[in-house]
Image (cartoon, rainbow over all chains, first blue to last red; front, top):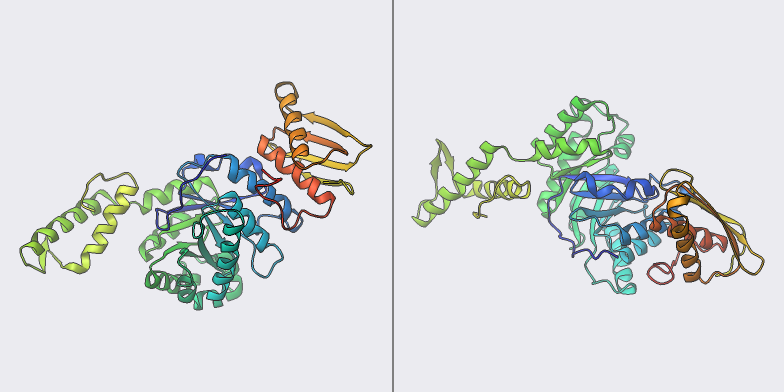
Length: 304
Length: 100
């Protein structure tokens, strides 16, 4: 049995890769790909008559396999199915780091799951509050209620949009410029930032179209997403490359933070760095860049 | 547990195993075929018998078609087949108790 450290609510989550919990051949190698989180799936990837078998596989996979630093999240079945309660029991008993609530539409959905998680933590002698939660928003209602979902529990670390179901509801399909989900992505991002939780984009399903994938990733980064859901290991590397701060951004951030500390100590509030106006509003962004750079292994300073 | 009816769990995909159970004649009767029989046959048999013992099953005819499954997969398939044989595989599983 491999003991796992207590999950961190806010950690680096650039890449979250889906794996079918029912396929032993996949799960056993999950950690070698280097994604930040893996998402063991009890929901759509598992056929209706194999839900029970998937839980037995999942339990032993959680207990036996050493995932190292890779975070282990489990996607449970929706609250409108007969499966979710047992899904939660097995996740908690097996020691998963977190649970992804499928088809989440309201704060009440989060609270319902939270109550079942807490009951399971007590049943299996797991520290109450250990198991983290995230929500998948898959419907217009989920997007409209994003803020109340994000703030429904102290266990919530983030929200993700699920493109397949959402586009179906909206009667649209993937567009090269992302216009089909632009508003939904934007609304979810605003809600997540207002609530102080992370925000993840949906999967890109055309594995052969790497140019389209890159374009979507660049848009994700420009919009401010924390990370991306993935369906294949070959999608990991590009996210890590594109989401990492550039050398120029790191140097700039370092300069800004240093200059701000010197200037504010001298009683100056607004000043210029390389010809650009800087005041306190720029500091959180610069600090975030440095933290991300350190997490990506690109910076070793001690400014933040 | 008592094997009440025939039940199956698993697949014959690589790294998996297909386990079938049915009521026995008062003992454990194990039939094993494996793609890695020469190297791991004894270990697979031990894992299956240990799992049955933990589940308190002593009267079963069990067949295992192994395709190079890890121990954790074998356990999962045996447990699932046994729980299915008494219609008990869907809820209130004793995780960490009989299942470990």
